[in-house]
Image 1 (cartoon, helix red, strand yellow):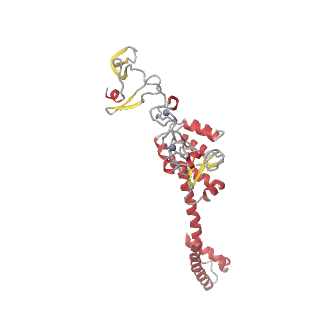
Image 2 (cartoon, rainbow, N blue to C red):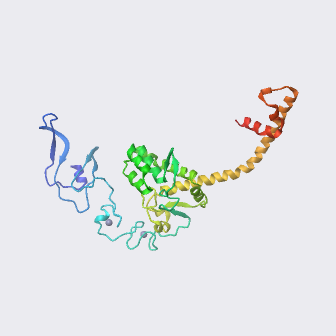
Image 3 (cartoon, rainbow, N blue to C red):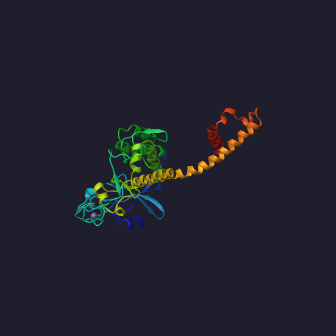
Length: 335
Ligand SMILES: [Zn+2]
Ligand SMILES: [Zn+2]
């Protein structure tokens, strides 16, 4: 009853208790099972009750006619209210960012309007930064046709759906791969690891596709990569115009893919920097080399002393020229 009160439901009938049938005789017993029935007045158009509930610490499932099979969180993509879907919306359309009427995200009237100058926006199959861009590369020993293929394939494998995984591998394009992968039920392990998996996939793409690597390496230090899609997790939640003209902290979605690419770009810059730093280091090396040369000289002297050598397996012709001796000595001290 407490649950019904919480959900503001008034049953119009008594609550009927279902009983268990005898497993052998199939006759109704007097033992009650966990199911209850009642009648209630119809809900307003477009509204329905949540399927999953808790009451007094117990999980309670509610079912009724017209309830959608898959429990979606209600969100109207026209007015952005959270108590109905677009299909049943009777309101004026509102801006997704500031929730005011009369304009769209990226319009000058928007409270969050600001032209972004430090972003690299990407989306779609024609953009190499996008996961939908067709390109062949290997991840975890499997060759994929796009980063999206790789991601959805890995998801299916890790969530135990091998049949879908093999379909994804053969999917003709990234969108088909995504549609297949979207149907795979996520498990907790996948939910926790998917960001790390995505990062690994993008790193693999970066290593195996010089064009992609070049594109992110040439970006400025303060560049923010952003995927301009409505995707809740990976994109900005806005189209290109909306993204480019909206303050970054007002983007409705998390832009996780953009963050991953920014992170890899940073790593690339660091690597480039350490390469530059390695030059003064080579001076240090030359100091080391002189020390090695001294050792080589010492060995030569030793050999001359015991002329008919084969001391310590050294071949006379090898150590004769100091140029040969140098790298050899260096190699042995390094290991
Ligand atoms: Zn609405
Ligand atoms: Zn607005």
